[in-house]
Amino acid sequence: MDKVEQLWRECLDSFNIDSAIMLSQSTFDPFRRVYVADGLIYKVVVLRYEISKNLRVCDLAAEFAILKYCAAIPGVPLPITHYQNDEFEALVMKRLPGQPLDTLDISWMRLFLILVKLSIILLKLSWRGISHNDILPRNVLVTSQGSISLIDFDQATRTNFFVALLRQFAGIKVGSNKVYGSVVSISKKCVKKKLSPKTIQFLRKFCRRNDSEALQILPSLPNDVNSQLKTLLKAWRQAQVSDASSPGRRVAYYSLDLGGYHFPGERPWIERWNMLRSAADYSDKRILELGCNMALLSCFLLKDLHASAALAVDADAKILEAAEQVSLAFCVKPILKCQDFDAVHDWETELFDFKPDVVFALNVLNWVKDKQRFLDFLGHFQEVIYEGHDSIDVESKRLHDVGFRYIDLVGISERRRVMLHCQK
Image 1 (cartoon, rainbow, N blue to C red):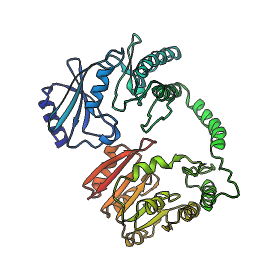
Image 2: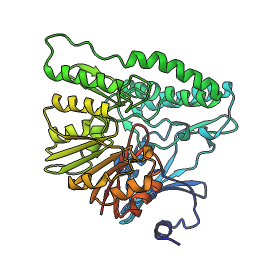
Image 3: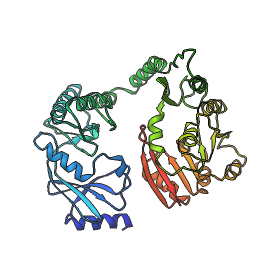
């Protein structure tokens, strides 16, 4: 038995549920599990090792309190108790019947009825001022008789009726809390599951041709606008014609709102920045940004968090021209370097010579052919912030194998990719 399983055995023994059967383990955290025993659900956390606490609005105690407040609503888990010792914590609920919606193959009529019944539950939650915020197919249980339940309230928040309606039905983010799913998004997911691949491909092309052309229109700036905005406009024009985001499409990688103007792109920069800015201490540190794209990260670290120097590297020369404009706009001077990480020559030594304190490798490994060479390169540094495309277990093992001893979860991106802070 490995150390992790031994730890879980101690956990179950401490709560006298050693005969419980594991139902699931968190995708992002091997120290959060759900067990079932005697008709009860046990949501359990190993407190010492939990790595995804910052991803949840509610700890188990807060989730218990919200469920207790909503106990009279049919289709919401009935809480039994919450208990905690020095090592472990558990939330106990009555088990609800049904299978997750994402595992079912259902007719159009049955889907419609499920969404109606789900909406009734959400209306009752909203009336009580509770917003679930995580309405995903896996959190909706459906029985063969057609009854519906909504589970997993660890992202739930207390608010008012109208805010809860906007979040739960339309998925509109009102306030500081994120909204991971809504009636609208769950409907889209279920409809997409029922369509043929050819139909989905046609709709994607049609929507992309119409929506992306509208959404990627650059702002029209008046003549008397300040030089910063004019320079950023040049940067976004250059980014749109590069192949660093979506080859063949006129789209920048990042979107940015500044001075009342929207510079469009595929990914909202502010969400990324809010996650990364607190991942480590950057003051007086030397930063190496691999796969930098427009080098917004390097520029913001220099501008806002007082990094001492930054080297921003990308394989696309055109995007580095955009990065140069971005650095001019924010009055900082990162070093910009064009480098293909699959080049046969020794590119590593020059980057080593920069002597970075913190290295960023965000969404890079997936696009590198010689992945082991790139991982070995990362393994030479003391501190790396890394974003990958695979599960946290796969990515953590990769990084552990090249020498990182401490690997913590920074967060999950809006594309559901893990962000890890790695140290030796």
